[in-house]
Length: 286
Image (cartoon, rainbow, N blue to C red; front, side):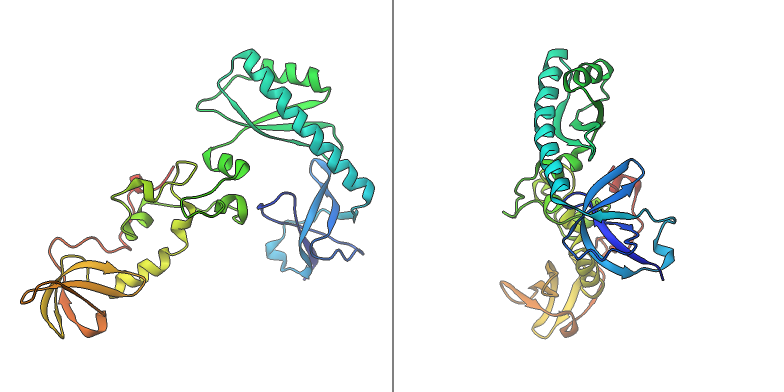
């Protein structure tokens, strides 16, 4: 198996495999690598390791060198230039009265091009803006429109849980999230409980989904009539993570919590569909 090193170029982004050659960069080191767009500087997330060829896209680009102080100083200058570029772009957007919001800017390692990321509700004709900004900055300018999830990832923030947004703290790739996941966790009655800062379905709905699906396989559905050690009753609540059901007994006031292995039941005619039922197209987030 070939030796490769995993390099990421920004925080919370996926790592790409590169050929370390005779170098032995340690995890956490900064390295200069070859890319399709020229030289770039990245952060070693995975130290050199043997990787199956099936996981690689040959030929591997190579690691040119361990980053020097001069390289790091160049990154600092580019970061300062990017901040100015974002400010200039914002001023020129207001001048052209375009319905777009600049989010972030990023200079190429050789300072030959700046990429400005922006959000907008519709497609925007920004050709005149590009010429204007390029004349101000005296370099090539590329504008890229991003979606709501990427906007939240770039800007960061705090979620309803009180913690930093998952997308801006540790998620490297967005995974599909569906309305079925919210329904399986009984959140479908209150949209505020499953909408993230971006306005889309919260990424964290995926984290416990398998646990909820497994629990639904062994728990009676809402409305089911069951036999418990305390008598016959009807399921009025599900405690998925505890793997218990809340039962309203026929011959007693109040409710009791019982485990599925302590009771028997038959499905209620109005019971919800099994969580593994085929998803409809409208259940999937765009």
